[in-house]
Image (cartoon, rainbow, N blue to C red; front, side, top):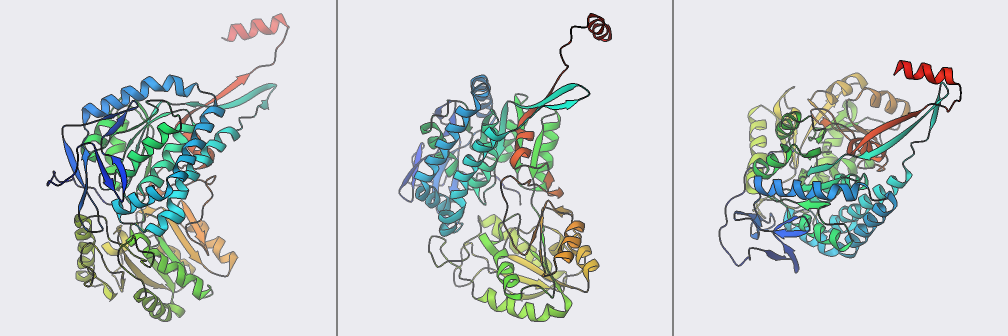
Length: 512
């Protein structure tokens, strides 16, 4: 995921300092700290990618707001951390109820804020927000630290609340990706401070309203808005923070890890990808084509996207022809329209970044098959779906994350070459394999360096499964018990059998 430059100052307009109305939904634009709305002297503009209009003037937090949020979260931790798991789970389910009750509002605001498809928000993205809370509420109650016997002793595992958790979330699916971390942290008994993305901050504010209505105690969930270099840096450097979960660019991830190391604060980092999409000659051609076209989803602003199409040589030319025809049928436009398949990129700066990748790919000798610039009939921030072939080995377009609707295609001769091409980047977030030979699928999957491998499917994962990246795609795994392993302090208690043998007791005391 790319860097997020500082937002511009206020340009004026009829926007109050405390709230805005987006798609007929009132949204507070101040922080949420200790159960209260907190303003800041400085503010920043939130610009909708749909029409590049300013839709909110948002409180711009810094060191002072970060300190206040950490203090509020620490004050609330003792009460929340000792709350019975059953009661914590009930509150998380009520938050999920609140998300579902306001699904249409959340979807409308997030679409206006980040430009993703409204139909996707309504049908899958916002429902997943509620599912995050329900899943981890139920998973909390299912934690099993059953006693094991060892040499006459018993051992029992518990997951103790760790403390204050900072969640720094991205803009491409702001609420869903934030709650993927917030929900298990709250379930584990931690208190949470979210630093939402400055390019799409509004649904975090609505989540604070929902959490309060659900009965979450004051200070257990806090929202500090602002720029990453200011609010984010202040939060990650605070010694009172026990856990940090970050999704974003590799460079920023390194900064977060370096800052966290000062206090030995554990971090969970998801840092993007450059995922391969392998298509063997024996694959179902129609299924492979449909899923390959889906890699343009969300205008390519998906960390997991298989942006490198690796196609067996015997079907390469035919697949490229069919893929090109299918791409020309993609409908670009206003993401609020049901018929739109592809919306805009998030900001003007990000559009320019994507165009920079395209121009450098041309200069490096890659051949443009289709796309390659702003959609002329739409203008604005709409970039055309783009495909490059014949890119030189090791070139930037094959190795670095573009985070836009830009794919590459390469032929391979056999399994060994397919695996070599797939692993030829510094990323390892995901990989997709299409083949009708399950033995081949297993052989290839075992050799791919990736946190998730999909075979004949894409974007499918039970929340019990581990999720995370290899190499530069991140550190750590979350999902199911792995989330509790990160957000909690895992404790093993060993109990020796009771004995009335005084000589044995003496020996034990002597060893102590």
